[in-house]
Image (cartoon, rainbow, N blue to C red; front, side, top):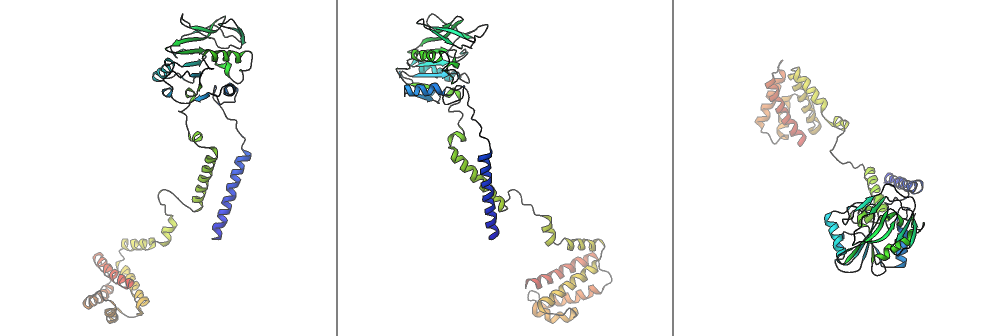
Amino acid sequence: MKSNIKAWIWLAVLLALFIMTGVFLTPEKLKEYPAYLSDSPSPTGIKALYTYLKDEDGSVERWSFSPARLSDTDSNQLLIMIEPFSIPDGKEMEEYENFIKAGNTILLFKKNPKGMFDQKSIIIDKGIDGSIIHDRDGHTYHSNQTSNVRLETTSEDTILLEDRDGTIALKSNVGKGHLIVSTSPDWMTNENILTKDHLPLVLTLLESGGAEDGAILVDEYLHGGESQASVATLYPEWLLVLLLQFAILTLLSLWMKGKRYGGVITPREEMVRFSDERIKALAAWYLKGRQYKASLEIQSEYVRHLFQERWGIPTGKEWPELKETLERRIKTMSNKEIASFISGIKNVLAKEYVNKQEYIMWSKKIELFRKEVEDR
């Protein structure tokens, strides 16, 4: 009991040291965020703009679900899509288009929107480190326009923003709703939103999408929402730490108790120490050397010693002198069988040579006497 208590004490001490080492000595790693996430405080995130819109208009929410769950009625919603990680497949793209046709608006910020909503783009020869941008009302803005992509327009499109190289943002009518496309998602990032005129430019596009009239949704589905759920995101950190500690304690407890899994492996010393390997080796030696008579004499003497241990019959008596005693003690054999055995064992032990057949027969008979004595 004392040894078990000491083992548990040492186990608790080691576990405490392990936890303290992990908490105090492990350097805290900064969390890495993908770009353009609305909850990312990193320079490439858009948390600053999202917080600003949340404070100004409480109807701003994150959308992390499939487009199939978007409204299919004229609810005057504005869905902001910022540099999606991948282009949606045909079915999802059709669901986004149905959302627009029902009377809602999608504001797409993507450096090269080609492949989404049948939008066509133009690649200019060079990028521009800084540029002057004009809106449809003739206002002038200064920005860091780094994209070398411009948008192709039709007579039905409304140009919202442009520079000397072409269209940067446009607005199209789709059914009852509107699609707004811009090639400048970097304006919205935390590191750029307050530089030059980026914030007024973004707000201009939001106003064009009717941000003041209805709910605003920031699309996180195309950034991995709903598809990247894991244990780390489904459960709180304190619960995960508790489960980890419980798992470590369980493993250490099983280790302390000597639990093993898999096939049972018996150490050789356990088999050798309590087995009859020596007897088997001696028996094999007697058989190979045809020492049949010597083997019968050893078996006979062993049974005589059992007679002495169990029934107090002296080993000095000859076999014929044991007849009456054995008849009283052994009830499973008839007197005739006992007399035949005593007579036969005396004769076979008197021979100079015993063949194999006789040896096997008399070994079996001696074995019957041995079992009779040991079982009583």
